Image 1 (cartoon, protein in one colour):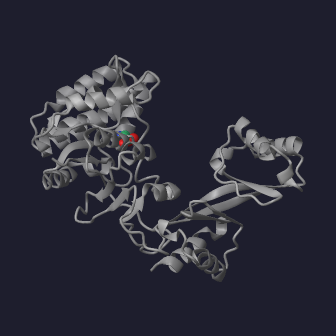
Image 2 (spheres, helix red, strand yellow):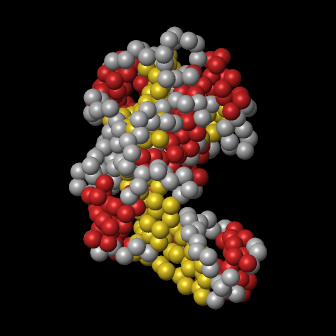
Length: 437
Ligand code: ASP
């Protein structure tokens, strides 16, 4: 029997109206056997996410401050859900037990995980599915990393074939029972693990958008929707996906050839975006998407006969390493090399890094260019297609964008262009227009 694992994010489960949509979606396909809920998210701009409130409760208790008002907000959300959905779950008892535990100094991970736990209990009753506590099947090592062997063994023995279940996302437990959580947004990871564990045919990730768009809609007017994207393309487009899907959730499913389908709970008829290993058909000359990010600094280093100075690059990179600074790209020429670094990585360390490069590498010229933006043009259809870069660069020049840097990955999957921050939006619009059809 084919199995679908479906994860529903916080906005899909923020109130009873959303729960109704989720029920309709789940019950419309008998293969949706394992359902992974997040905690209730924001109902509107300016609203609170339950997980954030739980973190705040924990912090208040840790600082011996009263948290009744905060807890009341949590209480109201869950009690409204249970009464509006007409459930028999004794939510008052669950909540008062939770409050006691918080007062007694329960751990931060325990407290923050309860948003998913309670939502799981509610959704299970509402769907008429079994509730399986993630603490029983998602096993963490003492280090806080997932214990893969124990987890997949537990999934195998605990999830009975043919019996549908709701499994809360975001947390699990160590062998001795202590609750541990993934990083924020980690319900995506739980869903991916369950999908791998049960050998799902697809991992559905239900959220409030219909997947990915070819470009940022805040920059490009009404960009086209991406129907299919490969895991590799998505990685190159990672500046774009950050809010839609947790990056760590990709690995369990990718390695097992399980596609991820990003879907919209508010518009379930739309197909969403499917992320897969290989596309059935790659259209030559077509790009999949354009993504970019502002605020990089480029450190440009020149040294005559750089290629003869064995270990020159290693010395430069070890300066970055010693300062704990990662880099994004390192385009190079015969006698020059540029380090493209995200400003958030650089974090006030630029002067030290420049001094150390000057002292240890004795360059002929060393210049730092701030306020740079990176734009990635990505698509497997670009491989071995003539004229893609010509099209790209002429679009940029026609729109008066000065290209400061070019980098093409050897896989020919992407072309990265560096432009000044001020040209960023204009450049994205120009590239999109050039490749629109
Ligand atoms: N509720 C958790 C968070 O807000 C996990 C999740 O929603 O995936 O980060």
